[in-house]
Length: 177
Image 1 (cartoon, rainbow, N blue to C red):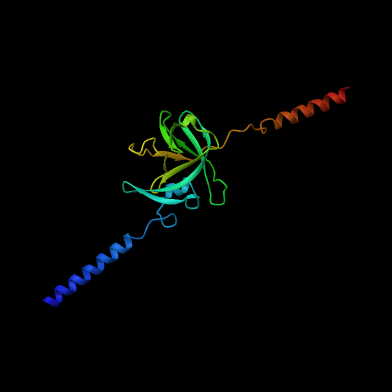
Image 2 (cartoon, rainbow, N blue to C red; image 1 turned 45 degrees about the vertical axis):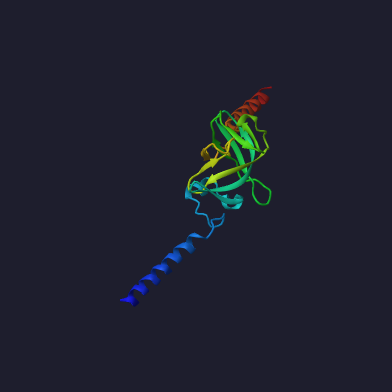
């Protein structure tokens, strides 16, 4: 009976130590379990990630980003990659009244300068971005991250048929004269 109890105790202790050692592996940018949705919206998330931060039992990837656009309800950022280049711009919906902490100062999004480098956090489990709140006591407010639509450019494809018609008209006019 004593041998059986000792065996059960040792097996339980071994199982517990396995669970503890598996949990004690620190989460980093390479082993973080980024959700499929995060990777779809930000394919280079592992490359741009500087470190993983845990806050209120939630993991966040920390990265630097360049501010490339601000509108009434959106901010466009380009995450910085290790080689100093920037990933494709990402759009984040934000509250225009919200103030964030940048270089130790509380500022509104409309006060930020284009090209300014920001520290930004992205949730590991869903495509949500957090800009540091103006006060440490304020809760983090994750904002949805989107891939912005491509910029609108003028297209000349609609002019091609008219150019042909104009050329025919000019050639017809030249033959009359």
